[in-house]
Length: 193
Image (cartoon, rainbow, N blue to C red; front, side, top):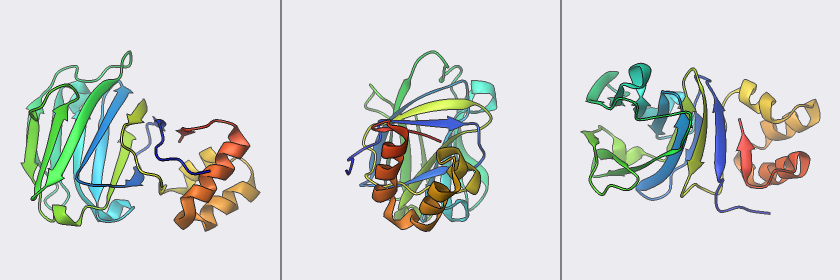
């Protein structure tokens, strides 16, 4: 059984990103979280290959920023008070092309934040997390496959050692692992990490 998208991903305040292969040059998503809904854009599926990050609702849900991993500096920061909420999903879109990264609200055509990012042409993955708080993501045009990083998150998915070993050994063939998870957990199209 293969799925063209995951309708929902739950994050539990972890510091490590959950990575997905990026398709095309844009993505749409909605998120429900108190603050700090972070998206990393990377050349590979791990934290050492992050090119830049978008932090939505950072600084206590007061600012949204784009940070280049190359400089570790906040390239662009905008005052966006209460942009996130625990009560409702807030929708966004992100586009990356020509070395520019832009972020906009779901129902608005124009971006509210953009930045020039070095090496953006190397972007192959995006990662999500909600730093310090629980969050729920609806990834609208999500990829078929997903790579997860971190033994702790893998253990959250699979409670017994046999299934944990299956995931650990089979990260490159995630569709088979998703089938096994759905069979084990009886939750179609919903994955909690």
